[in-house]
Length: 125
Image (tube, rainbow, N blue to C red; front, side, top):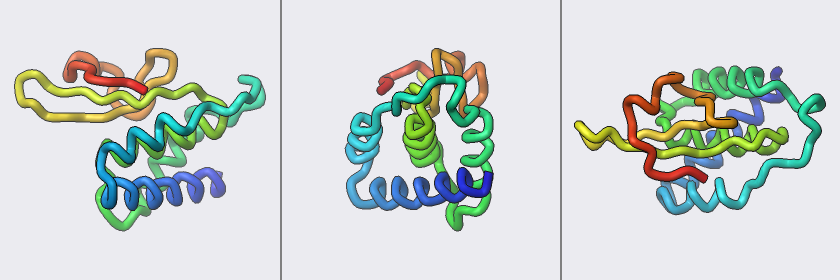
């Protein structure tokens, strides 16, 4: 588990630096470039362990981790372990608030399971 936390923490650093220097376009480029590794499902690290490791990495991160940074980092780590995760962005129609989250086979991984009721999906990759 320590390795997963460290890998998640380092990914937060890389994604955070990319977002600060190049913005949202860099985030999309990172997600599109990283495809899920071909690993048999029974040999993959459990998705819940990866999600928990990312949660802990966010706790130790020196700055507040916002949804965009966290979601991009989570997708990259999940794909590195063979999970075909999707990066999803959405917008609240009433408040025009933007949000990002991760889905795996149509289920929300790193946010509330009812997030689709709160945000209209804008894009997924």
